[in-house]
Length: 182
Image 1 (tube, rainbow, N blue to C red):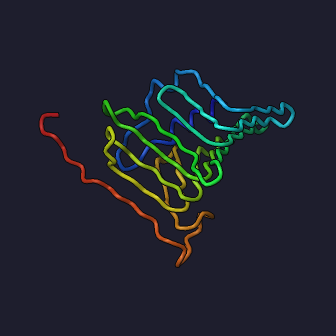
Image 2: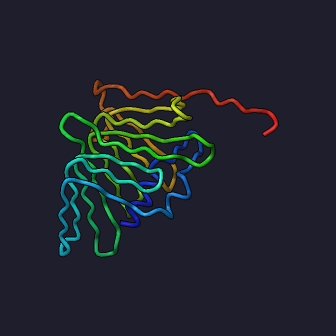
């Protein structure tokens, strides 16, 4: 679970702003609330269902279902699923300013603890905010984020393949202004 939570903290790192997850979050306990939990110790699968809310410091993730598996080497893999017609979401405060946040949403969010790659599938969107003001935003049917390289891609189909006529991706990147005297 520790590797999964570390990636969740890293999920919000954006290449555009160089803003990182709230460092203090890594020292906070992880709390999961749900309507039900099932744990299979033999298969190393933990499943939370029904109004799942994961919190760790400033990190808040919400989904209908959260499944966490662990391989023999101890790497963890997580899948968050949205309720029917809804979206799985996350929000976390970022270091680098008093009121900077990263938000994301998709119908399905997957995390690979071994590669530290997060994938957002179907109606995927990531936003960097300063307070309530959206600074940068990307959306498409698929977003893949490599937290090690701090690199992400956005594609127009949920499979991650770019398909002509499959829709368009959208990115809004606000201009950066530097304040003299900093």
